[in-house]
Image (cartoon, rainbow, N blue to C red):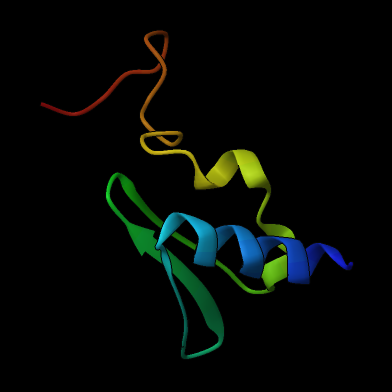
Length: 62
């Protein structure tokens, strides 16, 4: 199974939407909204809810 197939299967298993938007792929669902130019650029850890929240050491704008 290729990485792309694993990501597609994991999205389906978790009920996440995987769709082509222009020249990018978008994965969205509860706590997830990420883009990449290739499906294989996603990692399974990217599919975890809130995986892309700023770290405590990062500054965020108010």
